[in-house]
Image 1 (tube, one colour):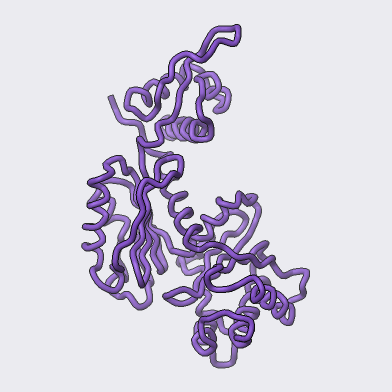
Image 2 (cartoon, rainbow, N blue to C red):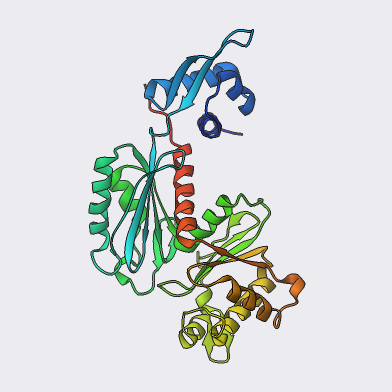
Amino acid sequence: MMSQKSGKQMIIRGIRRFMLAHETITKAEAATYLDVSFPTVSKFLNQMVACGEVISLGLAASSGGRRANQYQYNTAYMLNMVVFLEKEETYYKVYDSAGEVKEQGSWPTVLVAGGLEVLVGRISQVFAIYPAIQSLTIGVPGVVDNGKILYIPDYPPFEGLDISQHMATHFSIPTVVENDMNAAVIGYFHLHKLKDDKTLVYMYLGQNGPGAGVIINGRVHRGETFFAGEVAFIPQYDRANFYQAVQQAGRTIHNDNMPLIDALSRLIAAITAIINPYLIIFCQHEIDQRTLQLIQQTSSKYMAKRHLPKLVLGEWREDYLFGLHHLGMDVLLDRPLPDY
């Protein structure tokens, strides 16, 4: 049976989602959408107006009947900051609740030099400018278990760190930490509004070695030990796994790098045999459309064409950032209302 608290939070979340999808609403419209009583919706909307989260616009224009008050969501009331850590840089964006970018920029990498405390200092500077930030989402090139980094090759100072707990304690706001490829596949899935039954894989050779994000039937698949997507370890040849094959062939994907194309084609066949995805997405800054077609053709040497997924190109940074923002918005939608 649903608790009173969880029921309350579901209604508040529903009101937020409904308001963000519409320019203006009335209490009656929200009550109908949520299938809850008018007094219940009225109580929560009045609280949201009192704290500044919702703007009361006054009475709507008359249409012959009794005029209703209209309400608009204040998208600047709660902001979401996203940060991703890469070998070459640390990049960030601040979004409002409607997904509009308030600020973006980059800092020198903290993975190679600086570490966690330098990252805290830089984030603090942004928080000082935008005190309305109410959620923080951080993407990392490593294996993450509920905010703790279990495996992050080449960056031992970050191994074992519970970044989520550290940031949540320091800034007193919910903090989500996610693997970079999981965030990218989440971003692609929601940007392209794919159906919930779809299975897809996002591939990246990357600065830190190959990786993949996996969604199975609309849900991110992390695996028993959060190691799903670490395709670098998949054996491919007698004495080489996928990572070693990439190292030997070189990371540049073009139509005359047949050793790398063959390695990718074998990987596609292996993924197809295991999870039979609808899509495999490659990064458009790593590969062009002509080479993608060659990979599709070569894959048919190892797997019947009718089973092979569609291969497409994605804008990795855009997908990555949107995935982080989507995770941050999920936190904002669940934020409790302030007590009065």
